[in-house]
Every structure is written in structure tokens, then in C-alpha cells.
Image 1 (cartoon, rainbow, N blue to C red):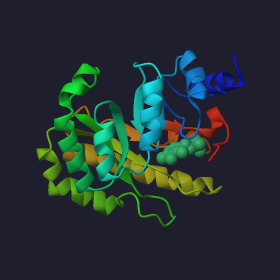
Image 2: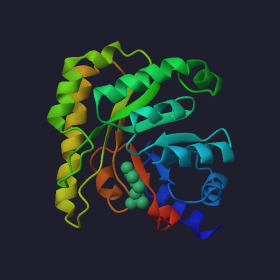
Image 3: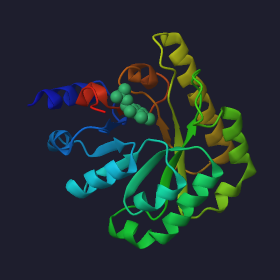
Image 4: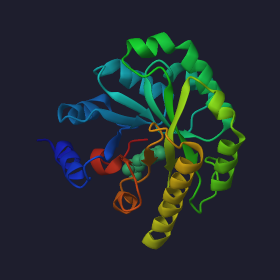
Length: 232
Ligand SMILES: *Cc1c(COP(=O)(O)O)cnc(C)c1O
């Protein structure tokens, strides 16, 4: 086994059954993804559209590609034929554009073995840092209560995503993940009762995923721990 494959194995050995590893391979070469692939990893996370397109073209077709970065509306069309999950949706307008592109690329998605509906997560802003991305819990509640999303037939809201503050204060990180976890249960009861497709809690990265696992994470997005430092 290569050192990368040993690190991948170690991460997998720390995950409880049922938790999905999203191997965050952004800024790493195709050869690194291939090493992880050869070890059985099939779910990769990328944060730039063009990079994802290039890697998708270069690697086997049975990889599930997750887009984890901020997605501009005018780029949805490039991902729609083959993306398996979009993690960071934070506006109704983006949801509507994903719905439009889901309809346009429906046949291609089905041919690629994907569900016709594009699965997405709503991104919550729970960290202390100032960022323009993500919905506060109140904004997310309003988006769900407003209800337009229910009319979008080509997009499925499959859960929530968040990032915790970049801090050594583990209690702070735990508070943020537990806020997201609490809201996940609220949303599940209030807006997705009986909808088993609303099931994903995507939180936890290299430095904080053990905390995320204690607060309901079903998907962890781990990059540098597996692939090493990114070469920007
Ligand atoms: C880069 C990135 C990750 C992975 O971060 P690491 O610290 O390398 O594990 C996870 N989530 C998002 C949204 C990212 O952009």
C-alpha cells in the first residue's frame, strides 16, 4: 500500500458503519485520485467546476462526483449531466437553476445511471467567521417554509451541509455541529415527514470530523488528511 492508501484506510477504519467518506481531492492530481480509487474509494469531492470536469473525463465512470464548493448559477449546466450530489446550495435561485438544468439533462443523467432528480444539500452558516456563503438557520427555515422548492420537480433536497469555525476550541465546534444537527431534525419533521430522501448531514473535515461524528454526520468531507497539503 502507498502512504496515501494507508491514510485512506486509517480514515475509513475510524468511521462508523453507514457514514460516507467524501474524499476531497481538489487541487490534487488525477494520479492521487487513482490511488484512492484503486483502494476502493468511489466518492470524491471537488470544489471547482473545470477541475471536476477534467477529472471526470480522466477517471472511471463508476465514481460518484460531489461538488462541495460555492457553485455559480451559470456553471450548473456543466455539472448537471453527471454530478451525484451538490453540497452547498444557499439560495432559492440556485435551486431553481439546478431544477432547470436537471430537466434539460435528464436523459444524460439517466444514461449515466443517476437519478433524474439532482440531489442537493442546503448549506447552513453556523460558524462564527464572516462569510457570504450559507444560510443562517432562520434563513433556511424561511426558504423551506416559503415552499417554492416543493414545486421543483428535478431537484431533491437530500439534507444539510455546514462547516464549523476554523478554531482549536472543540466546544465551539461541537456547539456549531449540534446546532446543525438540531435543525436537521426540525426540518425533517416539519418539511420532509415521510420523505426518506432527506437523510444527509454533511459535516466534518480533516481536523474536526471526530466531533462531527458525535453530532449526527452521515457524510464527512476529508481532504488534506488523506491527500496531504494542497498545491495551490
Ligand atoms: C476543502 C474542503 C474540505 C476538506 O478540507 P480538509 O481540511 O482538507 O479535509 C471539506 N469541505 C469543503 C467545503 C472544502 O472546501
